[in-house]
Structure formats: C-alpha cells, structure tokens
Length: 429
Image (tube, rainbow, N blue to C red):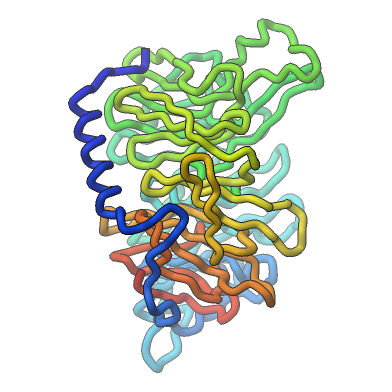
C-alpha cells in the first residue's frame, strides 16, 4: 500500500495551506491584484558574435548570472551578464565556457539547444534526431557546462545520491529505470517515464513531455524518503497478446518503493495518464479528461471539479488549477486563453489572449513560484509576456516575446531573452 497515514504531516500541511490561502484571501476567484508598473526593466548589451542562423538565433537563456546563446561557430556560449553592461561592448573573448553543438542527422546543420529547468537545475538538450540518432543533456553550472547524459537518458537530480534516470530514446523496452550508481530499480515489467499505449494496431508514445510539452510536466518525482513517483506502462497487461483494436492499455502514474522495488499504481486504473506535474508534495494530472490531485505524504487521491469544456493544457500553481481553452494546434495565430479553474467553473485571464505556452519557475533564492506565460505576437494581442504569482496576482505583463522555459527567476527578478530587441532583459516581479 502506498498510503502511509502520516497524520501529523497531513495536519501540518493542511495548516500551511490554510495559512497560504489566508495570505491570498484578498484575491477573488478569477480576479487578480495587479501591480502598477509593468514596463520598467533593465536591458543588457548586445550578445557578441551571436549567430544569424534563423534556426538557432532565438535559442537564448539566462540563469541570472550568465547569458547562454549560440555563436557563429556553432557553439553554446556562457557569457557573464556583468560583461553585458556599461558603455563598452562585450567581446566573445569575455565568454567563460563554450559547448560545441552536434550536427543534426536530418538538416545537416547544428542542433539547436533546447533550454529547460528540472528539479531546480538548468539544462539544455541536444538531440540529433532519427532512430539511430543520439542526444546529450548538458547542465548549466557556475563553473561551465557539464554533460550529465549522452545516451538519450532522462535525468532527474534531487540532490546528493538521489539522481534518477530512465531511457528516453527510440525503441524503448521495459526495466529502463535507474538510480545513479545502482542497477535497475522498480519492477522489470514496467516501461518507466513514457506516455505509452498499445492496441490491436500496434504501440507507440513519447518520453520527453517535460521538455517539449506546451505545459509544465515532470513525469518523475522523489519524495525525499523511500518513494519515487513516475509515469509508467505495465507491459505484462498484454499477457503476450495484442489487445483488440480500440481497446487501449492504459498508461498511468506508479509509486516505486525504493526499499523493495514494489511498483503500485496510484492513478485511476482504466484511465490513461499522459503526464503529471508537482506542486509542493502533491501530484496533479489528467486521466481521460478528468483531473486529479494526489497528496503523496498520505496517499490521498482526489478528483478536481472541472468544467465540461475540455482543457487543452493545464498548470498548477499555489494549489490552483489553470487551464487553457480554445487552442488549436496548427493555426498561424492562436485564439486560446488561460483560465483559472475553480469549483468546476472557468474564470478567463484576459491578459493571456492568444496563449501560446507556459512554464512554472521557482525563485532560485526565495521559496516562491511563478507561472510564466507567452502569448502570440500579433497586432491585436495586448500582452505577449504575462507572469502570475502563487496568489493569482498578475505581477508582470508587457509586449516582449520570450520563451517561458528559458527564463529564470532569482530574488524576484525575472531574466529572459526578448526576441524582438534581441537582448537579455530583467524585471522585478
């Protein structure tokens, strides 16, 4: 059984959540307490020797101390922000580290670095593509670049020896979950970390929704003690035979007991779960168009009231569920909007008209989180960058164009790359 009946912890967490919502009690459902100034921000100088390649030039990130971008030689450059201030222009010789990008097996050009953040660490991913291709995950550290995987392994670093990986490449097989420095963990009949399905026509799925998805996802969470929560597919359910056409076997969320490798399903059986996200010690996920929360210290599974209108993407911040409606992939201009979901009702956040993507960012210094939202840059879009705090306050809205996954919040200052001005910017939240 996963339920650990930690009554004391439950009481403490319940009190903490009550205090949090009390602190936010001035915010009515669907409304926001908005700050007065949105446009006051600092802009850094031009990035030296930056590539002009249209497929690479917008892959830029900042961690609050450095800027990261691709130069004309096909390298990811680590450039201190301190070198991008003042009257003197920076030089490529001011860079503190370089990482040579691989060549794509499809385009025969440099592979773009996909910047993302996971478990408090910042990385970029380079994937050469194709069944026979390869990938590497590189961590951004103060002392330079550090390769953490080179063989299409998904990497989750919870500190110390608590580093977990699963194979995320082509042609997956079960028994693919590892703890760094140890052999396989979990039960050998599970395919871990994947959004997978099988029916009479075959099988398929993917394993990197937490990087490439339009909404935040994690797909693996460690509680700091004995339990690992991970997306998984039980391959023994087929019993050696394909299911009938249309009868999909259901991917789900499982708990792995690290003491004995016992693997137990916690998401509803018979309902497919494609990804999940974590807010404090609670998992949030969708299963066949219904939404759930799972409080890991007590093993509590609860259904979240949601409207009949399906949500195209969702995020959770401060215990609140935000859902996207009206998004149609493939349209040149999005007509989607982000809504606060409360008691089964939608409360539109008008500033997010033409929603495009979003990500959750934790302040690197303070214990605060923010929802970073990007909207399409079109003539009738009032704002293209919107930030919401844990009390549902809009703390930033402006017309800059940024990639939420490549942003950083440090001491309530948001660092991002504005694609219109081609500059690193910073703004207080």
